[in-house]
Amino acid sequence: MLSVCSFMVLAALVYISNGEEDYLPPYIKTCDFNDKNLENCVRKQMMESLGPFTRGIPEFDVPSLDPINLGEINIDGNGLKLSFTDASMHGISNSELTNLKVVLGKVDEVFSLSFKANLSLTAKYNADGRILILPIQGNGDAVVSAEGCEVTIDSKLTHYKNEKGEHLKLVTPNYKYTIERTVFHLDNLFNGNKQLSDATHQFANENWKQLMDELAPPAIKTIVKTAVKAINKFFAHVTIQQIIVGYNRP
Ligand SMILES: *[C@@H]1O[C@H](CO)[C@@H](O)[C@H](O)[C@H]1NC(C)=O
Image 1: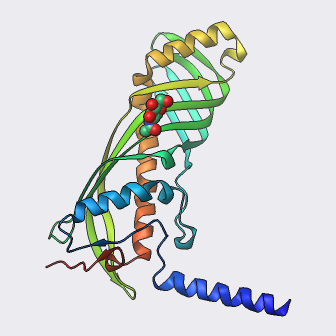
Image 2: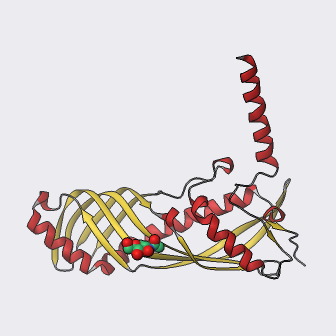
Image 3: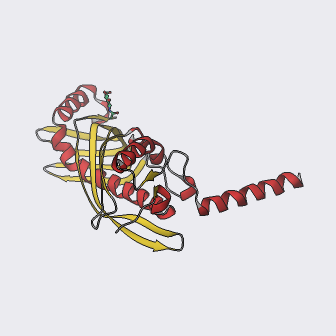
């Protein structure tokens, strides 16, 4: 029993020291700075690591991005009061990398990525008022499925040094997004009156753009903020040279 315990303590110590020194998640492969196709290498690595990365890196205290907690979203205007509470966004871990631009080793370094996913927001909703012309009233569980949601994050890269070495950091990220289609499922509209509920669903789904003009911006903003924070947390645990072997900036 004692020896098992000692072994576990020892294993934990070895593990921690590896974690502190040069641990990299197994799916993160390095690229060579002097490779003529450095950008291709980074793209390939990003494609392969996007999924696992979004599920979190406990060793680095990087949280899972699936789901992302959105808290509360309130829409109040144009005769509609619609609030979502306990909202979370699911589906980021099934993202597809659709574009990547990386400029490294220059004075102005750039990191820009686009990813596309079918996202679904789950929440408790409370609705009162009208969508354009149709009344809406109810509260209960909501699922909002945003299909083909593509988010582009454009960011500058800066460097900073600590005792481990030199690290990258995304700063002043800009973002934009497009959504192909949105489907709303609101349980218990009009106290469960099916006829009224069906009519409002049909109308909401046909006019999803107007609703998403209000709902998407706060949701996407939180997604981008959370993603950038996670990426920077990852960068804080690995030096540039650890991921881009031979990196130097003239
Ligand atoms: C989203 O769902 C559609 C239809 O179910 C599917 O064809 C498409 O490949 C999915 N897109 C992504 C990025 O997963």
